[in-house]
Each structure stands twice: as C-alpha cells, then as structure tokens.
Picture 1: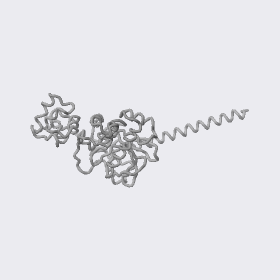
Picture 2: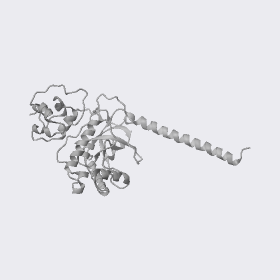
Picture 3: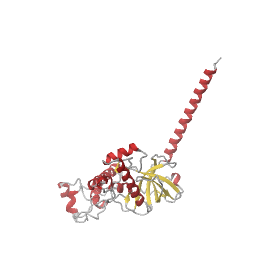
Picture 4: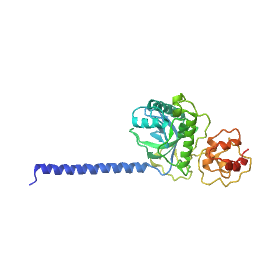
Length: 323
C-alpha cells in the first residue's frame, strides 16, 4: 500500500514533468514563429514615418509603414542610453567615449533629437525581420534606415553621436559587411579627430556638426530578389526594390565589376565622380572609392595623397585619370 506522502510526491513529480514539457513546447513554438518571420531577402518599406514615443532613442524607434507599427533597431551602430535604466550599459558607453555617465546620457539625448530630426520626413527601411529583442509589447527588428541624406547609422557616427558597434549584417547591395564596418570606422575616426558629439562633449562641442561633408551610403536591394511577402503582403509600401533608378554613393557593390571598363585620362572630377566612375580607374576598388568620396571636398586632385591608403605609387598610378 502506497503511503499518502509517497503518492503526493509521485503526483508532484508528474506535474513538474508536464510543466517542463509545456514550457519547452512554448519555447519551441516561439522560436519557430520568429524564424518564420525572418526573411532571407531584404524587405523594403518605403514612405515610413516616425511615431513619437517616449522609448525612442538615437538607434531605436517606433515607425509606421502603411497602417502597421514597428520598432526598428539600427544595425552596426550604438548610440548612448538616454536615461539610467541600464546603468551597466551606460558605464560601458561612457568608458568608450572617455566621458562621464551623465555626459553619456547627454550624448544619448542629442542622438535621439538628431534621429527625430532626420526622420521628420518619410524614410525607407531595409529589414529582414530579424529579432532585436526589447521590452515593448511590439517586437523590435534590426534594420538599415535611409533618410534623404543617406544611411542614418552613418550620419550618427559621423557626427559623433554613436559608435561603430553592434549587431552586424551585410547591407543590401553589398557583398561583405567589412566594407560598411570600415566606412563606419572612418567616420568615427573623423568625428573623434574633430572632437564633435560624444568625442567633444567635455569641450562643449556636443552639438557641433561635422566639418567636412560626407557621402553617406544609399543601400539598394537586388532588383531580382526572390519575392517573399511574409505578413507584409497587403502593405502597399512593401517592395523588394525601388521602382526608380537610384544613384548610389558609398561602398555599394554592383553585380558586374566596373573596374575593367575603360576611361580616358584626365576625365574624372575628383569632387563629383560617382563610385562607379572611380572604380573604373585601375587600382581603385570599392573600399578606396568609398574613402575618396568620404574625404571630399578636395582643393584639387593633388590632395589624393591625403586619402588613407594612397601612397606615392598608387598616387602616381591614379592621378593621371583626374582633371
């Protein structure tokens, strides 16, 4: 005969087992659900609009596309927090910029205002619906965001309001994320050198804009991307590529290489040449073309030697192609 104690113990064990199986099932279903929403192709949401929300900050914000609301988190950049809700992260961010925690919050608030201003006009979002986690009732997805001036993340970094740090992805139209990482690092180095944003907050240069104009990337999805609409099928603004041609700047890779195309000597204007034209010059690849564009304006093509990576030998090779 089984004692009441042993019977109760056995029943409790069975209950725990069932609860464990139920919890595992819930986790598995959630994982499958997230995976089902992630897209192998870039989903392009045009004419997005910023939604005012207290939780918005420099690199994460609420936005609408058609009738739907989303939260997007920028790939590859990190703006400081705007409050003390995450003290450990704030300390780490302050250490990176070599400033105090209160100053880091100031930078975070400046980044929030910068993003709000840049997104005051309709913008375009590139996302794969990859979960960026968060504490809101809405899911948060990683994304690249294009404003009228180009990539938002690059603009934040160039103005010293974010660092080259965070979840990486290969941007649409580029074959390797390293190209974007290098460009972001160059922008960060320039902001640090000019002591602006977080790099100049101690010198009261928090809101000083970048001295040299920069060409920010305009990412473009492959036009032959496989159609996969997910739950955005009924959203008019969801598309796989822009319907009009876009002039791209920055390290945007095309399908065919332009490096082998011929170009006459003395034909290229150093301050207006497109990336395609620059890559037609023997010895100039996508990274070097991006560096040349980012270093503008030049007084003349003789200033090419100031571009990182152009030594005497390369200068002698490429200089004849410029006016």
